[in-house]
Length: 637
Image (cartoon, rainbow, N blue to C red; front, top):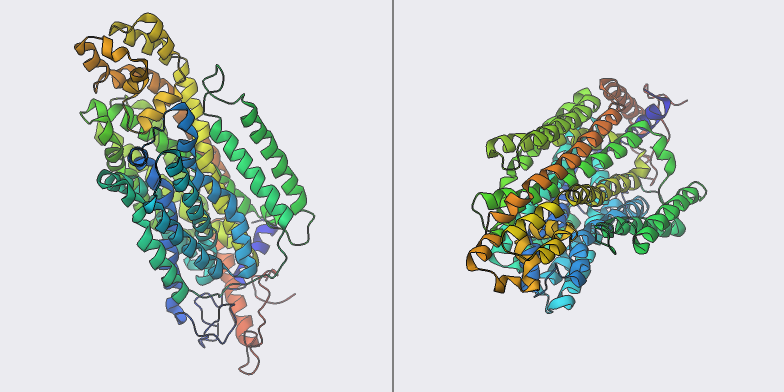
């Protein structure tokens, strides 16, 4: 184990004595909102950690369900506000409805995590639940139609995203404060399972609720947001280390604007531009990408020079932290790409070939993806529990390799697959991600000093959320590139055989594939979407019209080109996971668990010896400095 890791682990251990909200000498203290003795709010003693776990798990579940719930329900939402998202002028509304929440939460989590270190993690978490609830109250009562209705939804989704970012940034830090290190893997396992499974639960919930009324998609968040805010305010309390400091305005601005520019550029890069199938040569996209990189580079220089940085870049010298966040980024890119590709595969091809209408495919694709969630739910808590005893290294790395193998398996099945084989493969993929997530999160949070847990938790969430946004740009681009080489010829030939004039068929066949992908993704019939504006359907024989707009024509036509693109996408995803698995091998094993336990035992002995009833550090408002490394034997040097 490196010196840097040992120092970080011991520094993290230094605050372990109050991990359950109880001092090391066994006397119970009631903490005030600022973490000092003497307040009266909140539950007491050893039960507090379970209160913190249940509340933060609800918070992270609400935030991640809300991030994905609109993906499946977008067709019903756009029908409800009378807006066609596939009209060229409306594509921006579609992208911001889809990506706005993720972009905003990715940008803000580091800042909000740092503010938690300064002003109190529970205080920021409570405010986050309040904002989340307020956004939820406004969304289902959208009074507008058309573009105005879309802007209402996008605006209040962004408010919800700010609240969700507060929840995501501070939840891991609150749990790390509340649990001793030998239980953090279990706690992080439950929390991470709630967070990542929430992305898949949102798909199913969105499909079910949208089938009844699109407003229910947003209304379901109201009782969670309001009830969660009340519960968190009543039950949670500050027990972590707070670090009063000035806000690093320059660092916050360069980071926020830089990341927004970069992620927005990537999002708009999948739109057609000029005569190209994608927009990577667009001046707007290039400005966003180049400007974002320049600002983020400036952010790094600023953070190395300011007295109280928004994010202490020296944390990246801690092996477990830098390893963990990089592996999380790569895993998130792979997981997000897989989620979108599987939805398109099911909605655009497989479900339609098996008799489902296009309008029903969003709901059923969520249901058929349940094994993916099931694998994660089973493996996540188990790996978190075992990693508390044996270390994160082999669980994290092994889980990523298991997921990589599932991607290779998906490459080998035909486009019109047998569902039991498909279900087994996605279950294995989910289980692999579950094996990775909890040990990796616990290793990250155990490695940093207590006074920087909020910022570290925020950076961890930023890497995860940014990975999800990046996955859309990367994997949609790869899929579009794969389709662009084969789909024009296939689509032109298929349309011509059904009586569409060759010139029109050639024109439609050479349209950017992104239109067909988005149509399939939203549960629309892509061929009908392409042909209806031309008026040709009114001049073709009824039999040809029935074939063109039926359930078999488009899925059979696109199967081979789609599989060609799928090979490119899943090969890339498997390669990314293998790289992440190699990185995860740098995590500590059982030796880290032993050293951390020894450090915490030494710190507890030291704290017990120094705490006389008349002059405890807590009573005077002072705490042992958890940021100072404590040797494993607990003796000061």
